[in-house]
Image 1: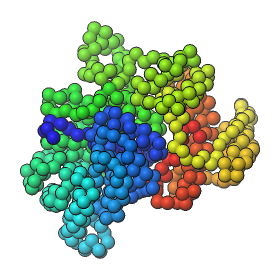
Image 2: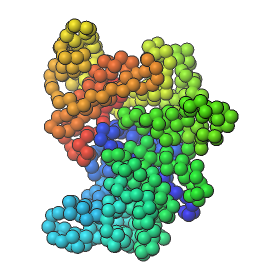
Image 3: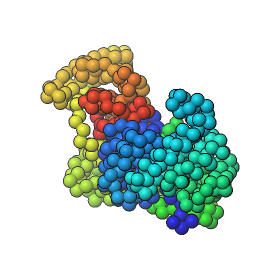
Length: 536
Ligand code: KIV
Ligand code: ZN
């Protein structure tokens, strides 16, 4: 590989999905993986196969059907994890096993407290070195492309870090990742760590060095770039910077920094930057995490100018206040607004611009939904379209409940009363129930609970506006819990009460899907993987 190429290791589907509440269903993950391939990322980290059947399946399907990037699967330095990763990647063409272990004293004491790892810190370190050696060799027997990560490297004793890296390289690792797992480092010290590793590790020139930064202090992008200046040639990042806690380094920001300041860094990426905005929208729609308007590169305001003096400058020459072109990152400054008079051509070419390709068998269904929505809304915005196109694409899971009817009686001085008709697919029957509540949403949820014959703790209810103007859609996200497991429902509608009801029914469907899978092990973040399709 030429020394000026920086590889983009995309981990939205693994680390990104570890953001609380960001779980995606398999259909969404596959769609995103195809988009990442179009974006020309070098590596897609598709999941952590041992952590849940849904993760295993997602990695398997992505490895099987997504062409272009290397598909990576995460594994601890444990035999069963590596076996699972290898099995999930089996049918893939270009595959990588990414194995990791905690190396800081804090991680060693907390995770390897059991006596079988040794009594002293030194003993535990020796155990970890053996685990790394075994795991990397096992992974190398499966694939030639093996990455090793020293988790919490940012807080690891440098001497021990050097030892671990030497062992991983000797065992056959081809990429060495030095993660700032807790977002603790500042750019100068993170860069110094890379310099030290290059000076002190044996055969370091035979591997690619990688950065992986979390944003706990808002420094993930700055640290990643500092690592590149210090010799790293792979950046691990996520779309919109989603990820554990405060998130990971944002792909669009690191890529555009390297692109805009190419002379400073002396490096290149292979990213198709014009797809950055559509990819950001797709991930936002799938996770329900909005993109803040002031988000660098892909935010709605990233190329808007409010102040008169700025507008004046921009009208004369855009480079007075802009360091990159909106069109280079796929921000469509002249977005065509679609409405009820738009035809199929306008709809599908707009969707394609947004990076969403609708198969011919689904086109008619999507168009019909579009026409129905256009009758209710004056203008249709990009967010509406993303939702609409995705609403048509379920993942084939069985929907247990369907809300066939909702009516509400509420107003000043009245106790809100909701009536619902809920269809149960298991018995092929419908149940009509009415209930009163403190507010309309409480009344709806009570009526749905009665019709479903169950009651669940409502952990959170959130609503936000998607699209623009008064007739924007309301997006409702609901989390319910049963025995400590969380189930998410997310739905959008121009009528926010209908969206509230749909989101709740979707969460119930996820709970039923979980029950049907009889409580198989699910992802360690405690949030069940989403099985439902949008719209309830
Ligand atoms: O943050 C981290 O250390 C990780 C590892 C698994 C690479 O995500
Ligand atoms: Zn991470």
